Image 1 (cartoon, rainbow, N blue to C red):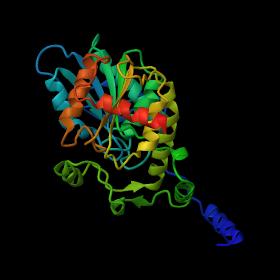
Image 2 (cartoon, rainbow, N blue to C red; image 1 turned 30 degrees about the horizontal axis):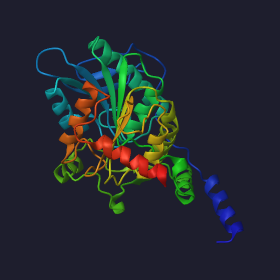
Image 3 (cartoon, rainbow, N blue to C red; image 1 turned 60 degrees about the vertical axis):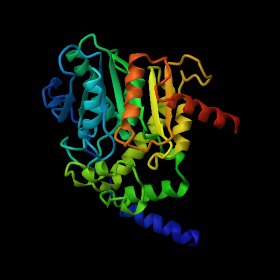
Length: 337
């Protein structure tokens, strides 16, 4: 297409442009409170909460978990039960725009989502005073957790990132960026299903089928929500270099959702990462050769969750699965290329 015609087309699209329809948090109206089935945000939003608690006695640790894109707190049903069986209390909530949270299907804002997580962390920590609290984020939830952990509440002792969504705009090709820009500014409400992409998120097919039947799992995504996610992933990618908390990054070699290149680049920029075998590091990465994107719900999820339990108990000891040694080998290979 001649440049003049392309310029005319772009101008026509801009004239017809539509603004993204975002649902930002409102002004403070209420005092935040954690109730048995939801927590009340400052703007009055009710965010549904699920919890999995150890039977009897004080938990050894508490995990506040954040779900991925188009999912909701039920994502942690299996992991929550497993961790509770090991003496770890787990809380998860539906983020704005997802599950039974406010405005399902509409994007909020990265800063609002991170602020929600910080407040939720304070509320959960107050309920379990003196018990170490960890943030756990899966995919999109991992990106939100990175933002929150860059300036964490003092109660948070560590960060667990499962296949964190760090495939931001700077990591995409120019055609991908242009297509997203055009769609966001012309048809922001257009909904995409991704059905033709042939991407498999897990080897747990029964779990995937259950998600497809769950009415609270979003099956189509607005273009402006995709744009919001890309913005979130970009800022998470750049913010990871500011993390100072003890951090465990989990990644699967078979992940078809978040590409390896931005993931490893993010890992390499972790400021406290030690890559010498046998070195003591407050920031660790684990690579699972049979792991997919939904590591915590894969058929091999128990291996990953056992590593999480071991890391919480002693963050400087080798992981039971050996996935941390595999990750160090991958980092060494990358540095030599």
